[in-house]
Length: 281
Image (cartoon, rainbow, N blue to C red):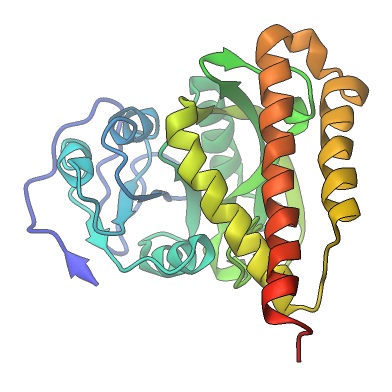
């Protein structure tokens, strides 16, 4: 772990001033930590932190970015920690343990909290949460356009949590929070600028497909050429036809093709691992 050199906290409009362990919230509500994990997010981190500047603590956990991510984050918070990256789940679990407050709002750098979501969360923390975690729906954009069909319109994630009851399972792909207790659903949404460019998305898709295939192979799962074909075509038909991705125009078509190619990569890699490594012990 690495702590960046301390600096005087900047003044951020709308941000509560409590920033030391045990400090009380500045309003009649439970204090909140906004947590963001980063790697080379200099173009995103400023707007992300600005959207949650009202939280009582802004915590950035960076995995040793090679760009100006930490410098940009320092304009909004002095709590920037660096920790070696192993997987999304392990990084976030380590980061959750560093939060100064029990309630944590978890964001990725390409996500933004709206004013409406802020009001709903503040009201919830003021009256006292009845659940130990909450689902938040996301409004997802693809190459600059919000996607309203194809399945993306129902996307949701567990992001507001009591960290003493919440933990990510130790997997590398599609990690979803495991919660010890009842889970609620918030009404307002996060903005998620999911894919800004195909050049940016390609390496991520390659990495996640490899992780997925390796984990499934280790569990004894196998694929055949027919498996690769059927799952690839099935994803396209489901997104573009059954879930009406065609209503999003050219963006919907390209997204369905991209998602299908992602499925192709996962199952093709799984098939290849079966050829190279043989039966799993």
